[in-house]
Length: 265
Image 1 (cartoon, helix red, strand yellow):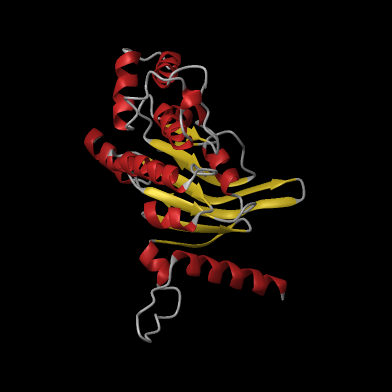
Image 2 (cartoon, rainbow, N blue to C red):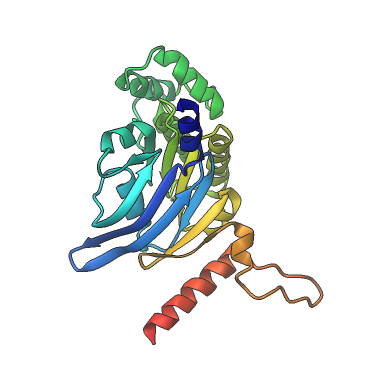
């Protein structure tokens, strides 16, 4: 009985959202959002500024209450089991939340101690190794590059081994090389079994990282699928001298543009 219950839990989505709604005064930000994220996968929530991506993440992280609908994270209801949800997640915002005066290793040790974990030094050393920051661990964070700070920020969010992590626009403001460093760190998370919900407005980022992609437009999910499934929504590639396959950018602009044009009529 216990084993079957555990197996059933493991088969459930790590994140399950149904009919999520949220308004700020007269502005409807979310208009019935449905999302299911498989355990150990990377799910990209794609959308323009103001589409509602951060609002979804804030609700799932129990930082904001929904007006309607339901949401479960790691098997817990975000409205009625908020404490359990918080124990199961980590949230990394758009800007690295690190202490620049401390060294990288000291930042990690501080968080481990705040979480009352044993052997904080060993935890810090392990995360420095996993995120290729061992050589920089003794340096003050103010000397780090943007990519190094973001990798340290993500490493800090993994202290305590949360099964679900939310990354809200994790590469905002980073140069191309730093973005690639962060992409590698995110891929390592999924390989280790962590479920990642990633919000981004960078189409190439979703292409590089996500197992599934949902496009959020004006508070609604207008499409949800794998990259190949999204590409099939456009007409077949035309063959002239070479075959041109549609990119995720083609899919996004076509769907969002068509939706906007229809609403304006």
